[in-house]
Length: 477
Ligand SMILES: Cc1cc2nc3c(=O)[nH]c(=O)nc-3n(C[C@H](O)[C@H](O)[C@H](O)COP(=O)(O)OP(=O)(O)OC[C@H]3O[C@@H](n4cnc5c(N)ncnc54)[C@H](O)[C@@H]3O)c2cc1C
Image 1 (cartoon, rainbow, N blue to C red):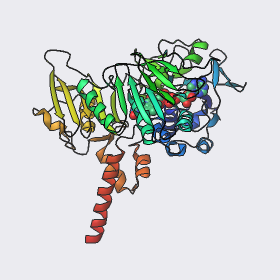
Image 2: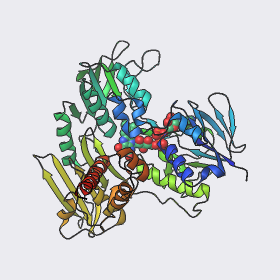
Image 3: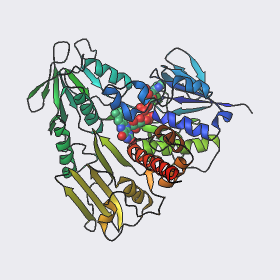
Image 4: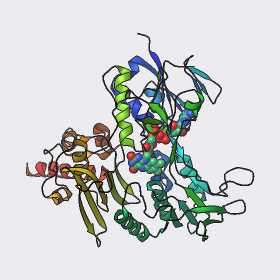
C-alpha cells in the first residue's frame, strides 16, 4: 500500500502529542509523516519553561530529541516555517524556498504572545527595544536570562499564570520584580476576589511586588529599557520588561491559504477545516466557538484526530472538553474549573478560608453536583473534584468530605491521579508493580505526569510508598 504524505505544521505540544497518538495506532505504516517546526529544536514541554527561565538547561524540558524523529521514521524540518498552503495542488511552501506535496495537512501552529499597545515597546527604528521580551519559547527564556542580572529590576506586565511564573523565576535569579496586572484580582480568569487575594499574599511573601488595577502606559529608555510609566503616572525603574498579557492564535498561514478562520482556525467535530485534507489541533483551532489554552483539551483533540486519520476509530468525534486548570503558580498550588461564582439562587456555595495556612477552597454546587471549584494554597483534593466534575458524580451530603485531602469517594483504585491524561491510581500502582520504579519510567509507561506535571509529586510519593513496602516485604520475607 502506498503511504499518504501527512504534513504537520508546527512542532509544539499539540504536534508532539499527535505524533505519539499516530504512532500508537500504527500511523507510520499508513503515512509518511513530515513535521515543520519554526523553532530550531525538538519538541519540548512549554509548561515547564519557568525552569529554563530560572537557569535550567533546555534539555531538562525536551520531550523529543532531534534524533527521535529520524529513529521514528519522521522527516523533521527543524527551523523551517511554513509560509503558505496550496490546498488545491496540496502543496506547502516553506521559508527555505522549498515546496512539499501532501495528501493530509494538520495545522498545529499554536499561539503567539499578545503584545499590548504600550508606547515605547519598540526603538525609534522599529526594532524591539533592548530589554523587552515575551515569554513563550525557550529562545525567549534564554534572551531574558541574558538580561537578568542579580540586583537589577524587572517589570512583568500581566498577573496571570504566565506572568506570575516569569516573576517567580526572575525573583529566584535575584532581581527586584514588580508585577503589573490590569484587573484588581490576580489570575482573574481562574480566581475570585478571595482566591486572588490569597495568591497575592503568597506572591508578595516571596519578595515580589504586585500592583493590581493598573498597567504599563509607556516603556521609557534611551535605547535600552530604563523604566516603565504606569497609567497612574507612577514610574517604576526597570532594566527588563517581560510581557505576559495573553495569547493570540497563530492563523496567519491559514488565512493566507484561504482556510476559514474566526478567532482561530475553524474546525468541526472531526477537527477538519472546511478545506478538504486540512485539519487543525491545539491553540490554533476553534471548535464550537471555543479556543483552548491548556493542554488537556489539546490531548483530547489529538486522540480523536489520530483515531480518524489512522482509521483506528472512524466514528471518533471531538465534542469539546470540560476545562480544568490545575497549576503550580510560582510555587503556589492552584486549581480552578467550572463556574467561579454562583449563577442561580438555587446554587449552593461552600467556602473554607484558612487565613493562617494560606488555603482557600470553594465549591459551587448545582443540583447536588459540582458546577465549579477553586482551590488555592492546597490542591490535594483537585484530582477527586476534577473527576467528579468530569463524570457528573453527585456530591456527598456532607460537602466538606470531598475536600478532605486524599479521600476519594469514587470507586477505590478508579481515583484519577493525572487529570490531564486520565490515569487512575490503579493504573499507576500496576505499572509500579510491573517494575517501572523510577519517576521517568513510570511517567513514560503510564503517561501520568506528562501534561501539566502537577501530579508528579504524588507519583513520587506513591513510588516511595510502594518501593518501601517492597523492601519491607523483602526484609520480613
Ligand atoms: C510559561 C507557560 C506555562 C504554561 N503552563 C500551563 C499549565 O500549567 N497547564 C496547561 O495546561 N497549559 C499551560 N500552558 C499552555 C500550554 O503550553 C499550551 O496550551 C500548549 O503549548 C499549546 O500547544 P500548541 O501545540 O497548540 O502550541 P505551541 O506549543 O505554541 O506550538 C506551536 C508551534 O508551532 C510553531 N509554528 C507556528 N507557526 C508555524 C509555521 N508557520 N511553520 C512552522 N512552525 C510554526 C511555533 O513556533 C511553535 O513551536 C503554559 C504555557 C506557557 C507559555
